[in-house]
Amino acid sequence: MCYLIAFIRARRAQSLCGLLAGFVLAATQVGAAEPPSEPPALERIYADFALARHAKDFPPDRDVLRRCQRAKDKTCLRLYRKVVSARQQILARVSAAGLRENLDLIRQSCQQPEPPAKSFACSGAVMAWAYYREPALDAQLLVEVQALDDALRSHVFNEDDTWLGLRPAPQRWADYLQRAPIAWPTPEAKRIAIANLHTPPPPPTWLSLPWR
Image (tube, rainbow, N blue to C red; front, side, top):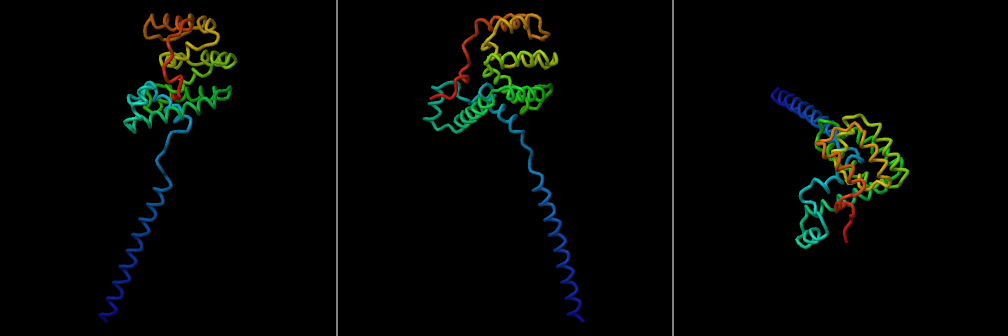
């Protein structure tokens, strides 16, 4: 009789262990099926490119890069590699189709308020306009900018303005800016933007990446 009671207790313990193991396995499978979400590839490319403007440890010129290399500064070198890689991928997309996907991303990421990842993607996408200098693409860009809603257009013109100084038809843009419904931060900002179309300031160093 004692043996029979012990046997029943052992079987119950095995059943309970099996049930717990099943719960653990199910929870593991659910976790594996839902990995942490990552930003879409294009958003990540533009966000990485924006590090050239926004990351304090990004080397701003060739001399600083060389110091990073001598010091084996991992953060500095990692940022440099990310920006160079992003730039290469952006250049490979410079086309009419690439401009359309760029503007689609701008419409998604250049809204207020926005999380930091989307803010960086917005900034990088506007920076990338500096590479759209071919006359047909420039004309397409102007048409697309005119079609933006007023709030988004104002947001874009208060991002990086390197691209404005690189327009192949600056007068066409100057004529547009004279009448465009843009909420400039100051009246002087509008005058400077138009002046920079004809006499652009020195370009930022990231425009000439990679440095050798």
